[in-house]
Structure formats: structure tokens, C-alpha cells
Length: 341
Image 1 (cartoon, rainbow, N blue to C red):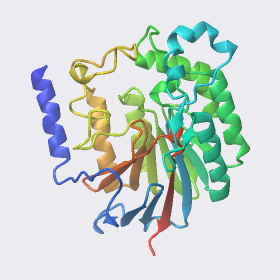
Image 2 (image 1 turned 120 degrees about the horizontal axis):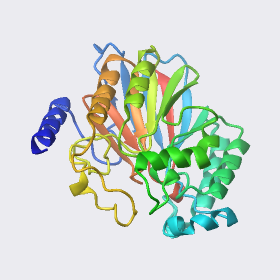
Image 3 (image 1 turned 90 degrees about the horizontal axis):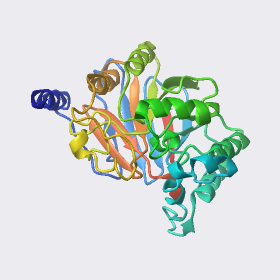
Image 4 (image 1 turned 120 degrees about the vertical axis):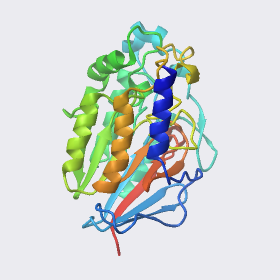
């Protein structure tokens, strides 16, 4: 086992040769991809807490997206009564929060509603929710959220977060529980699409929605991702859990070389199975490498994630990744993808 872990660390070190991890809070004024790249020329700039602009010579017209993550709605009704033993802790987790800008008292329901009011004013081409919409698989929470999203009149898309399907203390592997509760409680949010990985077209921009909420990538997802990247379109990828970048903790865990049973600090309080002693599957490491290859060789412009409730940026072999502050504080991000002037 030690040899296996060492080989994985060696693979990661090789994959990030020449990479740069940037401090939380955003890129410098401009980070650009070498013009010799087959994927074309790109440039990225950030604007305070809220704005990210991505310029690409592959983009034909401006696209504006609103990104939201980690709302953690905890509302429920009598339908939740048979499951209280599994949802009790998380139903109290975020009852009161502070707004990310004003520091005024708020709560997830109010924060989400006001975010969607902003969406109506900003008028993005689409809204993307990156998971942990609810703190447990609450029927009332999911129904209310969908009603609010539909009422905006703006196209919206969703990918699972780990809390969306997790009932604490319920028997089963995380993959089994994700399959069960995605089907039972979350399926209406996908509108017939494959919850594990699907893509949508927004004015010529492909947005790939990846469910990595179990910290692992399945062979089916790797295969689907490779197929998506074959299409010659400028693309973004959205997931709940960030992909590994050097300098960040294990919570940026999808592909992190130190993700394993020894670094799993929360399995007892979350009442779930412990992470594997041997760490990630080879498929997960292959996917991590595939993302970097897709940025260099295809048109994957950037990736975005939630989960960590913090804003950060990283740059690995010219592949940029951003994370979002939690929407339970009212936070969101506006991402504009624009033709290079």
C-alpha cells in the first residue's frame, strides 16, 4: 500500500510541474494561456468578490452566468418525520448566518431569495447551482428551491453536493446513498439529465456539470467527460468539490494525493463510512490529469466548485480553478465569457 501511495504522489508531482497556486481571493489582473496552445488564446481577470471575466478567441458572443453554491436550506415538513434521526444535526447547522458583505444577520432561505432577486436584475443567460442546495435530502427544501428558481424565468442547472443526498448515520456506501436519494429526492432538479455528468449549451458555450460529491470519479464519468471534450467548443466545468491544487488542504479533495482514511477528520460527526485507507481510485487520478489535458488540448477554459465555503483561485499548468463563498451568506459569482477584444 505504501508503494501505491508513493506512486500516486509521484504522478501528482509530475502532473503539476511548473504549476502555480495563487492566494485565496483571485488571480492577478490578468492570467493568460500561451498563444501556442491548440485550444486557442485565453485571458482571465477577476473583479472583487463577485466577478470573473474569461476572454477566449473561441467565443463568438458574450455569455453571462450566475454561479451559486452551498445554500444549505434546512426547511422541512411532516414528510421528514421518519428521517429525523438522520437529519437532526444538519437541520440546526445554518439556521442563522451573516451576510458576506454587510455582516448583517440572515439565514439560508432569505439569502437564496435575495440572490435570485439579484439574478432578475443582472439577467444572466443561465443560473448554475453547484450543490449543497439543501443540508439533507429535504423534500420541502427541494420543492421550495425549484419553485424559486423557476419563478426567475432564467434557465437554471444543478449538480449534487454531498449534503444534498446525505442522511447522517444511514447504512450504505456513499455511492449507494447518492444513487438512492438522488433518485428519490433530487431527480426533478435534473429535468431528465444524467445526474453524474451532463452538459448544456449556453449561446455556444458548453458547460459540463460533474457530480464529484463522493470525492471520487466513476469510470462512467471519465468516459463521458472525454466524449464531451471531443466537441470543439469553448467549455467550462462545474462541480461541487474542487479538484486538487497544490497548496490547498485535503478538502480540495478530488484528486488530492493525501486524501485517505488517515486524513478523514469528519466521518464520525457526519456518521458516514470513512474514506478508503488506500486513497483515491486510479480513475479519479486519471480524471484529474484529463482536466489538465483538456485545458491544454481542447477548449476547457476553467473549472468552478463550491463545498469549501470560501473564495479561492488556483492555477495548475495554466488550468484555472475558482471556488465560491457559500450562498448561505448571500454570496454568488457572476462569470462572463467574452470574445478577446
